[in-house]
Image (cartoon, rainbow, N blue to C red; front, side):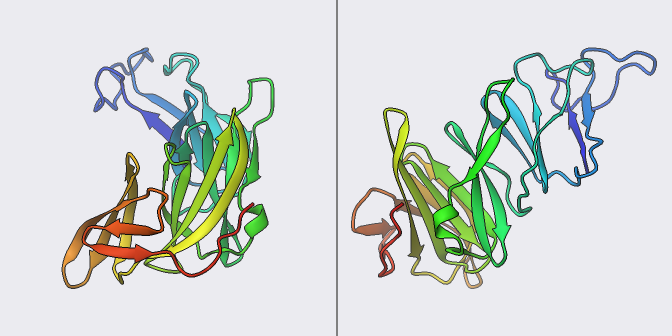
Length: 239
């Protein structure tokens, strides 16, 4: 739905009002959006002290600059970027990535929060590689240490799209996309990072769920447990 409900800060499971006639500061906080294009929430993400509430065609902000109480909390409209519904927004350092569909392929917005008096904006990091990410993004993860985002789509169970960017003195000076194919037919259920190690949870029809770890150091061959994986033989686009 379009209603956001938050429990009492001192009791995470307190979701009911303590008084029928008074709205107390310690009561649950409930915020709704009345905008016509606010359909069903597709994700919540903490970013730059604020709570970003994502809808299929819009983004809202619950400010973290003031205490959130039933009397003061608001969900303010921020931007109206269309996004896909399969994954939640991905927080990546000072960046917030939002997935969207382009026909049969996917793109990614780089969402930027500006000062309160300025309008928030988003620019696509996939603008120069349109059509490269086949299918809809359904699993993704990021590492700020590596400057890397790893994406899996509905088009393949064992293909990963890797986005890497390099910053110098606060300015992004290089970025690149590449495609990796894992030497497994198992379905990838979840991605995450443990420092610079990519952790993958897979589902095998014969064995069940398995955890695999890939050291994402910038070397020619990547070790996955006792097996070795190689990048597919193609040149990734350098942007």
